[in-house]
Length: 404
Image 1 (cartoon, rainbow, N blue to C red):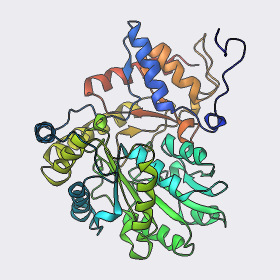
Image 2 (cartoon, one colour; image 1 turned 90 degrees about the vertical axis):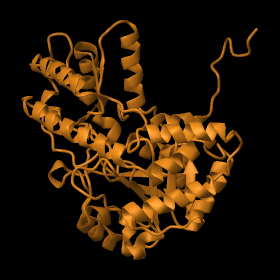
Image 3 (cartoon, helix red, strand yellow; image 1 turned 180 degrees about the vertical axis):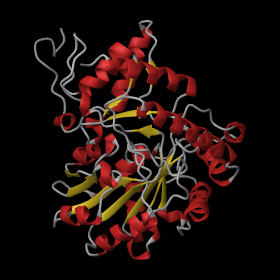
Image 4 (tube, rainbow, N blue to C red; image 1 turned 90 degrees about the horizontal axis):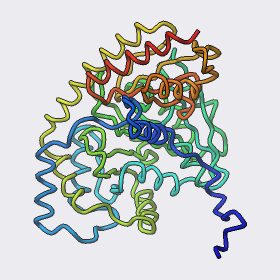
């Protein structure tokens, strides 16, 4: 007889600190409906709908033939860390050395390593809205205190120096953000970073985590990094990876660049959790980071066309308010106009309800803005074909028109 037959399993209270990612939850629900034979248009996941470029795949095949099938150094192969340094100098004019780089199994692990190495129980972590769903949950996992700062569509969903200064307290340990931003597509300019850097200069005990994984999917020009300011660089942890810019989501390769003390701490943590990242992926990553960028440019050109069309489609939907994204491949429309309305069967009280309504009635998967800290919005991905975008947005428009 099972010992658990008459009593619930007692699992760790750690599980109660954080939530399942809404992005993965909606994708899972969409797959379940698709398995039942429904025609689901997936506009929820943040995954380029392109295949990995051929020259990167060839590098992986060569790595297999060259017997890269053994354990790797925890921080990553030296020549890969050198390749990351080369990329940071080439694209960002930032000088790093291999001992400041840690390669991980995806950028998400790099973020977790960063938070775990910096944040203690009770430390405050400032996160401006909207933010990627995992930031707040990783902070909660570590026992840190999440301090949300609401930004506004009027300011392009970017935190202002005054808002930042007001949020910082004696307990503040870390500031977390992304540029380009998932989900809003906001991109900070050099001037905006300079103004924020002047605030951080007053608070030398505050670290800054800069998530730059969407750097190449930028519709307004060169991507700036807050690490460019020498007086701030030692406190900045750059997070990046290969998933978005190289269409390598399934390869699971992320990296961080930081002061050597922080990098060493992250290496220590990673050594007890996953150790080194996949050997074959690392060899392919060297090729990705140091050679032909034309496939990335072609991908961004296609995203640019889709962004234009998506904004046209959104502007044709009464009640939907949306700013044009400057980067990434999402739109983040405000949809509170539909709260309190119904189609005769379902009543929409919030963004969660609207996303479920669109999934069940329009058969389009999106993600609630609540997960990103903005409960009046939903996130819609345009990392899908133009055909599916046209189809999905037509179904969304039709479903919204039924809400009275």
